[in-house]
Length: 187
Length: 187
Image 1 (cartoon, helix red, strand yellow):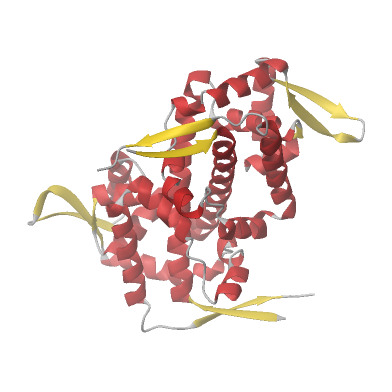
Image 2: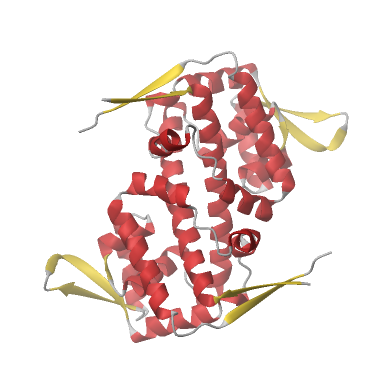
């Protein structure tokens, strides 16, 4: 038995901090995301499913639901709509007959590439808001304490999908290394 | 002119990290929050308005909207509903005739106290998920890098309301210091 003690005051202060900051951060991310995907007639869930399929090079519906933090039925229904638009295809795997897998079609893959190319056509407040930290640290912040909290809540398999997506980005972008120049006027 | 350079790969990695973690964290906070307020027939927006009014000891509708990260019309409409339930009252201040202010009624204040007393009747995954960091740091994590990003996005006045709410919690709970014992079975 391991006892951990904290006061109600600590709980309230922490609850206030994490509640406010997670809401504010998510609302900023959501706004950036909506502006980015607006020209493509996709909602956030649809784009998230495409994004996960792109970065995991195909994924089971249950992995899409887990990593997308959405219900399995939501993941399934929006995947169906993406299939109708010929952006995604369904399949079964011989090694795992119970699960349904989705992967991007050629059209879906092309769309993802195009959206990445147009990433900087819309504002990304969370990137702009992190540039000072990037300057300070020499790289974008990694938020390791938040990552630890999320690992505790969502489990190791959630983090493994996270790592897989990072590895895919590392590989996809290793050749191409063009530099984005962000200009900011200073007084 | 100050130029900051980063590659598309960096942008994608960072975007993936902050997008996934902010969604996962907010969904966990939202779930905890809903379980906590469920017995009181309030939705998250309504409770957030009461919570802000409680911690700021009254607030203008525009401060409620800003700090609650909701539209002014949402803040106003839900405040009206809370007024109908006699939990909140509207007023004007002599020093600031343009803004409408809300504050908790005695009934509203009592409800907030009761909810705080019952805080540990429901699970709080973000608190449980942070206990290891609390043990490591000797206190709950403060997520200062995320706070810096939020300051850049939402501005200094957002952070001032944040600080005011912390100060209020410090004061309200300074007398009472009862300890919550969290028991966790270990193998």
